[in-house]
Picture 1 (cartoon, one colour):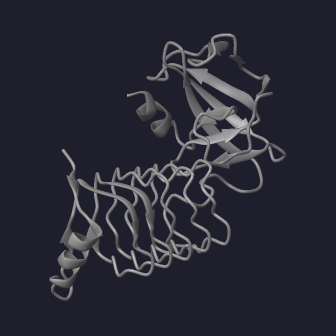
Picture 2: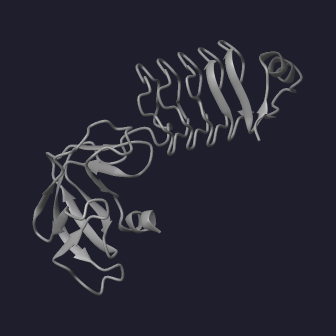
Length: 236
């Protein structure tokens, strides 16, 4: 059960904090309020529901927001540097000019979010393209019957990734198809998602439904991983 906190109650909690203290407000409900420009740094909002809240230009550096929901909230010019945003739901949020330098966005949902002029750096985790931006590379996927498919993504293939290590491309060449233990080789393998999509050794495969939207998790394309181990672990 989430604990609902009003704007006045939140202001009182913040006023009592000691220097360097991380406030623990996990599983909190904040809704329909204006917190623009507030100092909300170093607060634990894990598993919280922060809906329709104006957080523009707030200081939310080193925020903890694991599995937090931000439906309808705005972050225009907000300082989110060093924030921990694992699996945070930011779908449809306005993050125009937000600072996410040093933040960790693993598996965060950014579908339809406005990311105009967002500020990143080399320490921003799980936001930048995970696969090589240019040139060919090797990818892996697991097909029906746990057949492991090794693919060569060519130089001219379109490729994208979101906030996980999963990569999507529009075409690839099948190099090998083997069993998990590498003892058997196969000539073909069928996709788990579409049984009519068949990978055949030595042949090219094409995703006519490739969607270039990086942050649309269910977008069309050939879904692959950069290592065999990641591909196997994905299916458990």
